[in-house]
Length: 117
Image 1 (spheres, rainbow, N blue to C red):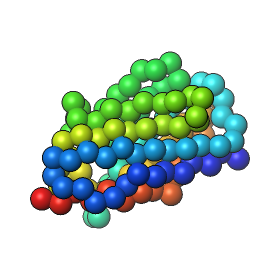
Image 2: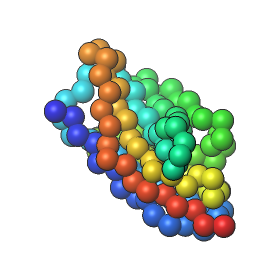
Image 3: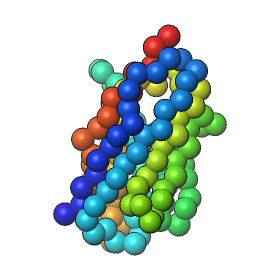
């Protein structure tokens, strides 16, 4: 059973930075991707960033140039470095793992990020 645990959320002022971490345990096939999504109150969950097992990355338009997704395979951890934060970045951030062989998604419990103006 794959388990994902996010950490690193909190309160930060606009213009500040935060780094989110997603630690995973369990077995996942080597063909996979890892993503960060976020959901603000009253809004749909949206893609923030994704990284594939091959190292390719993709970002939502609103975070391009400000956020960076990375992974440390030895630590079974995926990171989201968030810079130049804006109040509109406030949301619950979720880590997601996609197993590309069995086509199954796994989700963490979420971590709150609040950016004050």
